[in-house]
Image 1 (cartoon, rainbow, N blue to C red):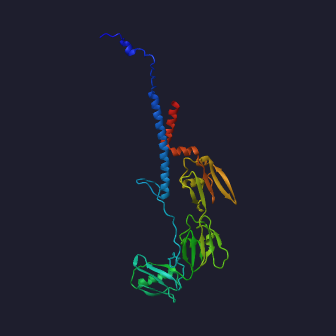
Image 2: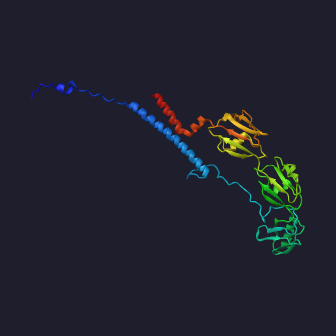
Image 3: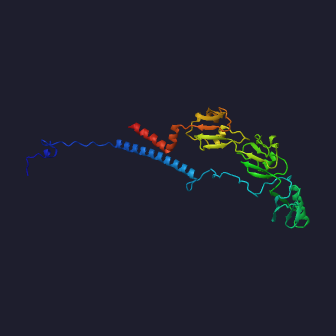
Length: 369
């Protein structure tokens, strides 16, 4: 069938009058779309890395405060031990061994035992006539004998009676009416004392000065208005002042040693006790505090020292001290060591390695647009 309509006009012919030509939609190029997606992914990874780092720090701080640890986590640090505290002396509490020169008298409460013979043990009080009733051997006169002489006498009675071949008798004085010395403060003990003894002997009998004890002790003596102050120096064994005589009924006060305070970008902050026997330097303090954190300003460490009633700030470059380019200062009592934090380092530390890589990649992609 013939038609006067040209087929070419039907397919490709011009539009009729009044018709509006459709505007072609713009097409997004594939490379630009890929760049946008990569940029958004990098930005999201950056945010996730920072958030994960923040949550991890919060969780570790919470665990440190509550003392909890995630299951399966391993650590090289020893578990925290509770602060050691000696019990307060109470009535009839066993005293420490008073020494061989302690003289027994009526009213003393003693514990008698034989070494490696658990069946033989007795706690008796000397009668008014100075005798003690002991198992197997009966009444034994101990009035006026020293602890060593009393041990030898009881051992001889047990041996001659055929009860033991070579008994080793020990006597521990639990209570005495002759007198004793009380040690209070960082050391808590009650030392039986009938005669005069040196301060060194009393402190060593009590266990020796602990590391956190001050080497300047006070002795409160009945009849003396003011306490007697004795400076033992750094070494108790070699101190001539440790020969100071101690009398019965004296009270020896041992206070806590001075401390140094640590603040700022250290792993552990707080007070560090000073051992008077060994000087403490700045690098040693940094090691005791767990080391310096990454965000610390190494060249801006501040040593705050109290001189009289004034405080002086001493600027120290701990990096030079670590490298041996500056002297390592010896710290004094009540020094405050403060290490400020570098803001940029703190941000990088909070982001973590993944966050830093994501941030660098994001900047690179943005610059390539």
